[in-house]
Structure formats: C-alpha cells, structure tokens
Amino acid sequence: MTNTKRFAGRTAIITGASRGIGAGIAERLAAEGADIAITARTYESHPSLPGSLKETAERCEQYGNKVEIIVADLADEDSRAEIVPIAVTALGPIDILVNNAAAAIYQPIHEYPLKRRRLMTEINIQAPIDLTQAVLPGMIERGQGWIVNVSSGSARLPDPNPPYDLGGVRGTYGFYGATKAMLNRLTQALASENHHHGVRVNTIEPKHAVMSEGADKLVGDMLTEDQIESLEAMVEATLILCDCDRDHTGRIEASLDLLDERGATVMTLDGAGAHPGGYRR
Image (cartoon, rainbow, N blue to C red; front, side):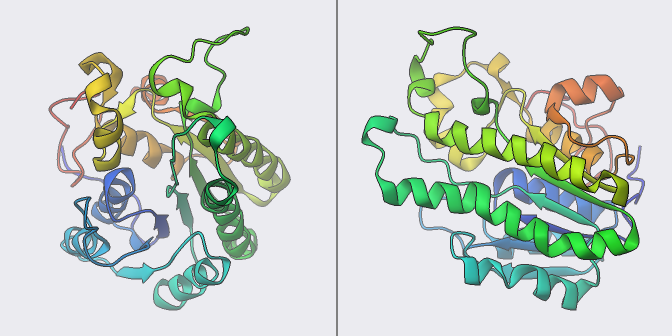
C-alpha cells in the first residue's frame, strides 16, 4: 500500500498544527500531495508540551510540497485575520480549511471567570467563523471547497434526562462542550447556506479520546484502552471530509463511525501503509 497523492494540486490551512491532531492532519495532507499552511501561536516548542510548528513543518517538508508556517494567535482577531491572506499569497487559493485549534479549559461553570469564557469563545467559535468567512469567497468562485471543523463528543448531553451523570471530567467540561455544540450548529448552517456553491462543511469528532500531548496530561490516567483511539484513526476520518462529494455536507461525524461507514483503512501518517494498530494506538 502506498499513498495516493489524492490531494496533489490542492492547498490547505490547518490550525492548531504544532502538535496532536492538527500536526497529524498536516503531515498526512502533505504526504498525500497538498501544499499546506500550518498555524499556531508559537513557532518553537512550548515550555510544558512537546511539539512545535517548526517540528511539524520539518516533517511535512520531507514530502516535497510547499509548507507555509504562520504564527498567529487565534484569540486575537487582528492576528487571525492575517492567516488566510498570508496563506493565499504563499500557496494560492485555498481548497481546504481544517479548523482544528481549540481552547479546552475544564472548570465548573458556577466558578468559570468571564476572561476564560471569552477566550474559549474567541478560539472555539469566532476564529473558525472568521477563517471560514475569509476562505469562502475563493471557494465559491471556484465552485468547490472543503471546510472541516474539529468538534467534540462533549457537545452532546451525557444522558437523555436530568439529573445528568457528571462523574469525572464530565463535571468540568460543560462550557467547552457548549462551544463545540455551537460549532456543530454553525457547521450545519454554513453547509445549508453554501451547498449550492459546492462548498462542503462538516464537523468531525473523535469517537473515543485521542491521546494527544494535552489530552494525555489531562485525562490519560482516567481512561482504559477501549476508551482511546489512535491519532491515525482520527486523521483518516478527517481526510475523508477533506475530499468528500458535494452532498456529504452538514454532517456531525464521529471518527470511527465514519471509518466504518466508508470501510476505510487507517493509514500511517506518511500514507505509506496501514497503521498497525488500526483504530487503536
């Protein structure tokens, strides 16, 4: 098995690409032939987390395509407004936008400060909308485009009726889940508004936890192996939505369910062969 280079000739922006899911999506798109713009807040490694835009770029550049690094703060409207113009100047019109970056601050809502609520809303809601508005005119002009918003199972209510089972981390991710629920609703609105233009807008969420660097530190000791999926599985599902047909739009997808629906093989991040763990690490 070898990668298909099915994204050759296409351009993509991936936010939150310094580590974790975003870095994995960036590498796989590059391996499959896309020119990519990767963005995050810092160029070098974070003092407490591994991974950086520099390291992601080095992995992606080995595939021989263009890689543009854009350092930007998605919480700042002026900073994020520079992302799409820089990417277009470097790569040309944008075909794919993956809104992966998110702020996930877990805290009970009754003590959640306004500063954190504003930060979460800026990064999880306003930034994806701003970037979408910036790429849409070009997509509409060309009659096609793919926008993928990375969501979360926390957007759903944990039980059908109150009082809800809010044990463990579920008792502290209410505001984060609310921002992702809003992102899901906006996804469907954008899909409806732009279907006739050929622009596909979908969300993808992990079916189970993906142990990215941040998640592993936060909840790694709370989960069993059957509650964890491989990074490669989440990336594989995301790539399906980066290349779906025009009627596959407005969908709120869970990674493993979508892979099952398509009968997809989970590939390694270099696209060279099947990931030995499949859905698992």
